[in-house]
Image (tube, rainbow, N blue to C red):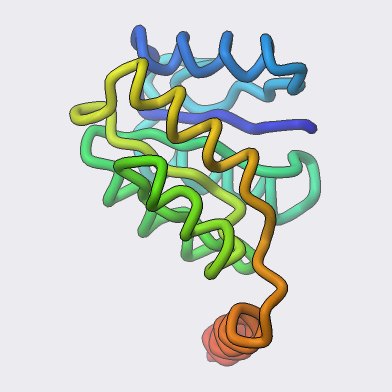
Length: 150
């Protein structure tokens, strides 16, 4: 799988996640401050979101200090369902119920062992296929279409 990774800063956590994803056999696309210094969080987030939305990457892993700003910015791009996950249970839920395609983690709160747990949960949980899951994802897509026409 081709995974985009982006952040407004490159640090030990982002380097750990890059290596972890590569060790799992994923092709990693480096964006934002991971590829060039001086990228602010909105720009790093939108660059990653566009990569996923346009099919240049299959999914994305995104970081900022709290994770909140990056989640907000990425979710402004049509086709993106970015989820800020602070533990493995949230990652599983975001995949199952929300069909999230961008994982967001906080640079402030996430340790390397926690990031590993979150990544393992994220990549092992398939999108939910229950009527409840599908119905709600369709509702999100419909809302997104309305937003794009304004």
